Image (tube, rainbow, N blue to C red):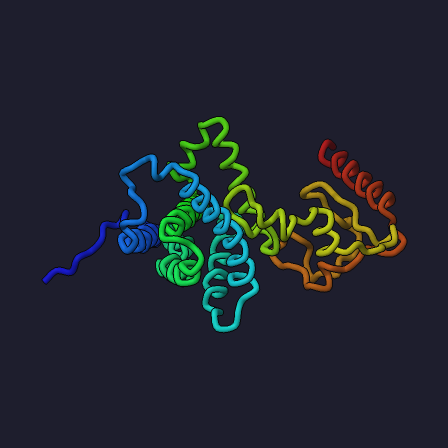
Length: 298
């Protein structure tokens, strides 16, 4: 008996497909349980304040919940839920630096959330909110939650898939293309500095309210505090391929650069003599270069 195998295209995208299917199925079960609360075939009942207000509140609540979930559970970590932080750290290890967007299908397994995240959170929120909201308000509220979550998962998937068709098409749309470009840059900044920009979807209200982005100058000073060095110990910037020492100078290496043997660690990091200032080194370097040019022309 042959085992059923998914096509390769579906198998590679199964993490995001499973998330979408499980999220829609869990909301469909909730809507079927309260099937008499809203008449979905009647547009008058759907497009009313009693439906739109809870719908918008659900989307805004999910926007801030996404910020807290990302910052506290995925980065700070909570005792007993360490697997969430562990999985997310793996996501940052895979999509880091030049590999922020990847075409490697094995890397795609670390983009989407597990399939059980939305059904589990929906169940917990349902048993809490059913005490305060009517069935109609519950369905409208979780409809906004579902929409925000699906937009988050799908756009996050596309952000880390390099040269996907959707982003190439959106880049051609004038206004939407610029918004999507800023969206990707915002999330790229989070992968470069994981302590900032925890919100993923615009308008990034959680980052604005709770954790404003630090200024680049502040980050540079915090990571690289300024050091006072005398002018004699500053190494000048030379052109690429230019020799640092004169040929007559004794090098602390067993052989000169380019002869097949590298210098030791102490030799590579040896500071120039204290009597050489930046101006003196540069003038000496020019003298060496001019002398070599004269020898070649002769």
